[in-house]
Length: 280
Image (tube, rainbow, N blue to C red; front, side, top):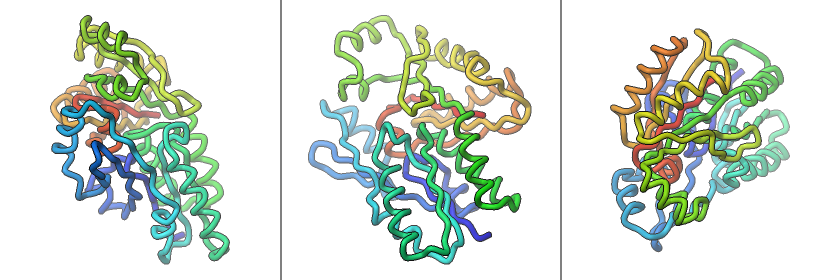
Protein backbone atom coordinates (compact mmCIF):
# COMPACT_ATOMS: atom_id res chain seq x y z
CA UNK A 1 0.00 0.00 0.00
CA UNK A 2 1.52 3.30 -1.11
CA UNK A 3 0.14 5.91 1.28
CA UNK A 4 0.42 9.67 1.80
CA UNK A 5 -0.01 11.65 5.03
CA UNK A 6 -1.47 15.14 4.68
CA UNK A 7 -2.00 17.68 7.45
CA UNK A 8 -3.17 21.25 7.62
CA UNK A 9 -0.65 23.77 8.92
CA UNK A 10 -1.75 23.33 12.51
CA UNK A 11 -0.10 19.90 12.30
CA UNK A 12 3.20 21.15 13.69
CA UNK A 13 5.47 18.45 12.29
CA UNK A 14 9.16 19.30 12.11
CA UNK A 15 11.04 19.67 8.82
CA UNK A 16 12.78 16.41 9.67
CA UNK A 17 9.45 14.62 10.06
CA UNK A 18 8.17 16.03 6.77
CA UNK A 19 11.29 14.87 4.96
CA UNK A 20 11.47 11.44 6.62
CA UNK A 21 7.81 10.56 6.09
CA UNK A 22 7.01 12.70 3.03
CA UNK A 23 4.24 14.56 4.88
CA UNK A 24 2.40 17.20 2.87
CA UNK A 25 0.86 20.31 4.44
CA UNK A 26 -2.17 22.33 3.29
CA UNK A 27 -1.56 25.83 4.68
CA UNK A 28 -4.02 28.07 6.44
CA UNK A 29 -3.72 31.82 5.94
CA UNK A 30 -4.22 34.86 8.18
CA UNK A 31 -5.09 38.48 7.73
CA UNK A 32 -3.88 41.00 10.30
CA UNK A 33 -4.31 44.74 9.87
CA UNK A 34 -4.86 44.30 6.14
CA UNK A 35 -1.81 42.11 5.56
CA UNK A 36 -2.17 38.47 4.50
CA UNK A 37 0.18 35.79 5.83
CA UNK A 38 0.43 32.23 4.50
CA UNK A 39 1.18 29.56 7.11
CA UNK A 40 3.92 27.78 5.18
CA UNK A 41 7.72 27.75 5.04
CA UNK A 42 7.77 31.38 3.85
CA UNK A 43 6.23 32.68 7.08
CA UNK A 44 8.63 34.66 9.27
CA UNK A 45 7.19 33.43 12.55
CA UNK A 46 9.15 35.77 14.79
CA UNK A 47 8.05 38.82 12.79
CA UNK A 48 4.47 37.54 12.68
CA UNK A 49 4.34 37.10 16.46
CA UNK A 50 5.71 40.62 16.93
CA UNK A 51 2.97 41.96 14.68
CA UNK A 52 0.34 40.14 16.77
CA UNK A 53 1.76 41.60 19.99
CA UNK A 54 1.79 45.13 18.55
CA UNK A 55 -1.71 45.03 17.06
CA UNK A 56 -4.96 45.70 18.95
CA UNK A 57 -6.62 43.26 16.55
CA UNK A 58 -6.59 39.49 16.33
CA UNK A 59 -5.59 37.71 13.07
CA UNK A 60 -8.49 36.34 11.06
CA UNK A 61 -7.66 32.88 9.80
CA UNK A 62 -8.84 31.14 6.64
CA UNK A 63 -8.76 27.37 6.29
CA UNK A 64 -7.16 25.55 3.36
CA UNK A 65 -9.43 25.56 0.33
CA UNK A 66 -10.93 22.48 -1.29
CA UNK A 67 -8.52 23.06 -4.17
CA UNK A 68 -5.55 23.05 -1.77
CA UNK A 69 -6.44 19.52 -0.73
CA UNK A 70 -7.29 18.39 -4.27
CA UNK A 71 -3.80 19.36 -5.43
CA UNK A 72 -2.26 17.21 -2.70
CA UNK A 73 -4.39 14.22 -3.77
CA UNK A 74 -2.95 14.41 -7.30
CA UNK A 75 -0.22 11.83 -6.95
CA UNK A 76 0.42 8.16 -7.59
CA UNK A 77 -0.37 7.10 -4.01
CA UNK A 78 -3.01 4.42 -3.40
CA UNK A 79 -4.46 5.99 -0.30
CA UNK A 80 -4.35 9.22 1.67
CA UNK A 81 -4.74 9.97 5.36
CA UNK A 82 -5.57 13.57 6.19
CA UNK A 83 -5.29 15.08 9.70
CA UNK A 84 -7.05 18.38 10.35
CA UNK A 85 -7.72 20.90 13.06
CA UNK A 86 -10.78 20.30 15.22
CA UNK A 87 -13.91 20.84 13.13
CA UNK A 88 -15.22 22.92 16.03
CA UNK A 89 -12.37 25.42 15.57
CA UNK A 90 -11.84 25.56 11.81
CA UNK A 91 -13.37 24.75 8.43
CA UNK A 92 -10.27 22.74 7.47
CA UNK A 93 -12.01 19.41 8.12
CA UNK A 94 -14.98 20.35 5.94
CA UNK A 95 -12.67 21.47 3.12
CA UNK A 96 -10.82 18.17 3.26
CA UNK A 97 -14.07 16.17 3.29
CA UNK A 98 -15.44 18.08 0.29
CA UNK A 99 -12.16 17.55 -1.55
CA UNK A 100 -12.30 13.84 -0.71
CA UNK A 101 -15.77 13.47 -2.21
CA UNK A 102 -14.84 15.38 -5.37
CA UNK A 103 -11.58 13.47 -5.86
CA UNK A 104 -13.09 10.03 -5.34
CA UNK A 105 -15.77 10.72 -7.93
CA UNK A 106 -13.03 10.86 -10.57
CA UNK A 107 -10.69 8.35 -8.89
CA UNK A 108 -12.86 5.56 -7.44
CA UNK A 109 -9.83 3.29 -7.17
CA UNK A 110 -8.22 5.56 -4.54
CA UNK A 111 -8.90 5.60 -0.79
CA UNK A 112 -9.01 8.65 1.49
CA UNK A 113 -9.69 9.00 5.19
CA UNK A 114 -9.94 12.38 6.89
CA UNK A 115 -9.32 12.50 10.66
CA UNK A 116 -10.91 15.31 12.65
CA UNK A 117 -8.20 15.60 15.31
CA UNK A 118 -10.60 17.37 17.72
CA UNK A 119 -7.47 19.24 18.72
CA UNK A 120 -4.55 21.08 17.16
CA UNK A 121 -0.76 21.50 17.23
CA UNK A 122 0.94 18.52 18.93
CA UNK A 123 -2.42 16.70 18.93
CA UNK A 124 -2.32 16.53 15.14
CA UNK A 125 1.33 15.48 15.17
CA UNK A 126 0.51 12.64 17.55
CA UNK A 127 -2.19 11.34 15.18
CA UNK A 128 0.00 11.72 12.08
CA UNK A 129 2.81 9.72 13.66
CA UNK A 130 0.38 6.98 14.69
CA UNK A 131 -0.97 6.80 11.13
CA UNK A 132 2.56 6.31 9.83
CA UNK A 133 3.18 3.57 12.40
CA UNK A 134 -0.02 1.75 11.41
CA UNK A 135 0.57 2.09 7.67
CA UNK A 136 4.18 0.92 7.95
CA UNK A 137 3.01 -2.18 9.82
CA UNK A 138 1.24 -3.35 6.67
CA UNK A 139 -2.24 -3.01 8.15
CA UNK A 140 -5.14 -2.81 5.70
CA UNK A 141 -6.63 0.62 4.97
CA UNK A 142 -9.97 -0.18 6.60
CA UNK A 143 -8.26 -1.46 9.75
CA UNK A 144 -6.12 1.68 9.95
CA UNK A 145 -9.27 3.81 9.76
CA UNK A 146 -10.81 1.91 12.66
CA UNK A 147 -7.64 2.00 14.76
CA UNK A 148 -6.92 5.70 14.23
CA UNK A 149 -10.43 6.75 15.22
CA UNK A 150 -10.06 4.85 18.50
CA UNK A 151 -6.59 6.35 18.99
CA UNK A 152 -7.96 9.85 18.40
CA UNK A 153 -10.77 9.30 20.90
CA UNK A 154 -8.29 8.16 23.55
CA UNK A 155 -5.69 10.88 22.94
CA UNK A 156 -5.39 13.90 25.22
CA UNK A 157 -4.39 17.51 24.56
CA UNK A 158 -3.54 19.69 27.55
CA UNK A 159 -1.83 23.08 27.45
CA UNK A 160 -0.66 26.11 29.38
CA UNK A 161 -0.83 29.64 28.00
CA UNK A 162 1.79 32.10 29.20
CA UNK A 163 -0.11 34.96 27.56
CA UNK A 164 -3.84 35.41 27.06
CA UNK A 165 -3.69 38.18 24.46
CA UNK A 166 -5.51 36.31 21.68
CA UNK A 167 -8.18 34.96 24.04
CA UNK A 168 -8.89 38.51 25.13
CA UNK A 169 -8.77 40.08 21.66
CA UNK A 170 -11.10 37.55 20.07
CA UNK A 171 -13.62 37.81 22.90
CA UNK A 172 -13.15 34.33 24.37
CA UNK A 173 -12.14 36.01 27.62
CA UNK A 174 -13.68 39.24 28.86
CA UNK A 175 -11.49 42.27 29.50
CA UNK A 176 -12.38 42.15 33.19
CA UNK A 177 -11.37 38.48 33.55
CA UNK A 178 -8.18 39.15 31.61
CA UNK A 179 -7.28 41.97 34.01
CA UNK A 180 -7.83 39.67 37.00
CA UNK A 181 -5.75 36.91 35.43
CA UNK A 182 -2.88 39.31 34.79
CA UNK A 183 -3.12 41.00 38.17
CA UNK A 184 -2.92 37.67 40.00
CA UNK A 185 -0.32 36.26 37.57
CA UNK A 186 -2.65 33.34 36.88
CA UNK A 187 -1.73 30.89 34.14
CA UNK A 188 -4.49 28.85 32.56
CA UNK A 189 -4.37 25.07 32.13
CA UNK A 190 -6.68 24.18 29.26
CA UNK A 191 -7.77 21.00 27.49
CA UNK A 192 -9.23 19.94 24.18
CA UNK A 193 -12.55 18.31 25.02
CA UNK A 194 -13.90 15.10 23.48
CA UNK A 195 -16.09 17.29 21.29
CA UNK A 196 -13.13 19.26 19.97
CA UNK A 197 -13.73 22.47 21.89
CA UNK A 198 -11.47 24.17 24.45
CA UNK A 199 -12.23 24.10 28.18
CA UNK A 200 -10.54 25.38 31.34
CA UNK A 201 -9.17 22.53 33.45
CA UNK A 202 -7.30 24.41 36.18
CA UNK A 203 -5.08 27.40 36.87
CA UNK A 204 -2.01 28.28 38.92
CA UNK A 205 -0.01 31.32 39.91
CA UNK A 206 3.04 31.57 37.69
CA UNK A 207 4.13 29.61 34.66
CA UNK A 208 6.36 27.10 36.48
CA UNK A 209 3.60 26.13 38.90
CA UNK A 210 1.09 25.86 36.05
CA UNK A 211 3.37 23.58 34.02
CA UNK A 212 4.05 21.40 37.06
CA UNK A 213 0.33 21.12 37.74
CA UNK A 214 -0.35 20.37 34.07
CA UNK A 215 2.11 17.47 34.16
CA UNK A 216 0.48 16.09 37.33
CA UNK A 217 -2.95 16.38 35.70
CA UNK A 218 -1.88 14.33 32.69
CA UNK A 219 -2.25 11.13 34.71
CA UNK A 220 -5.79 12.09 35.73
CA UNK A 221 -6.77 12.67 32.09
CA UNK A 222 -5.40 9.31 30.92
CA UNK A 223 -2.96 6.78 32.37
CA UNK A 224 0.51 7.48 30.98
CA UNK A 225 2.39 4.20 30.46
CA UNK A 226 5.86 3.16 29.38
CA UNK A 227 4.37 2.58 25.91
CA UNK A 228 2.99 6.11 25.61
CA UNK A 229 4.18 8.66 23.09
CA UNK A 230 4.15 12.29 24.18
CA UNK A 231 4.44 15.26 21.83
CA UNK A 232 5.24 18.73 23.20
CA UNK A 233 4.62 21.77 21.02
CA UNK A 234 6.11 25.08 22.14
CA UNK A 235 5.67 28.63 20.91
CA UNK A 236 9.19 30.10 20.74
CA UNK A 237 10.34 28.68 24.11
CA UNK A 238 12.57 25.66 23.34
CA UNK A 239 14.25 25.72 26.75
CA UNK A 240 10.88 25.57 28.49
CA UNK A 241 9.85 22.66 26.27
CA UNK A 242 13.02 20.80 27.23
CA UNK A 243 12.25 21.35 30.92
CA UNK A 244 8.72 20.04 30.46
CA UNK A 245 10.10 17.03 28.57
CA UNK A 246 12.44 16.15 31.42
CA UNK A 247 9.69 16.55 34.02
CA UNK A 248 7.41 14.25 32.01
CA UNK A 249 10.20 11.66 31.71
CA UNK A 250 10.88 11.88 35.44
CA UNK A 251 7.18 11.53 36.28
CA UNK A 252 6.07 8.87 33.81
CA UNK A 253 9.03 7.48 31.82
CA UNK A 254 7.04 7.15 28.57
CA UNK A 255 8.45 5.38 25.53
CA UNK A 256 9.00 8.58 23.57
CA UNK A 257 8.82 12.33 24.17
CA UNK A 258 9.11 14.54 21.10
CA UNK A 259 9.37 18.33 20.85
CA UNK A 260 8.02 20.40 17.96
CA UNK A 261 7.63 24.14 17.47
CA UNK A 262 4.24 25.67 16.77
CA UNK A 263 3.77 27.17 13.33
CA UNK A 264 1.59 30.13 12.42
CA UNK A 265 -1.89 28.88 13.31
CA UNK A 266 -0.95 27.26 16.61
CA UNK A 267 1.25 30.24 17.53
CA UNK A 268 -1.62 32.64 16.88
CA UNK A 269 -3.61 31.13 19.73
CA UNK A 270 -0.85 29.81 21.99
CA UNK A 271 1.06 33.12 21.87
CA UNK A 272 4.74 33.28 22.77
CA UNK A 273 5.45 31.02 25.75
CA UNK A 274 2.60 28.57 25.18
CA UNK A 275 3.15 24.84 25.76
CA UNK A 276 0.84 22.17 24.26
CA UNK A 277 1.22 18.55 25.37
CA UNK A 278 -0.47 15.66 23.61
CA UNK A 279 -0.30 12.03 24.60
CA UNK A 280 -2.06 8.70 24.52
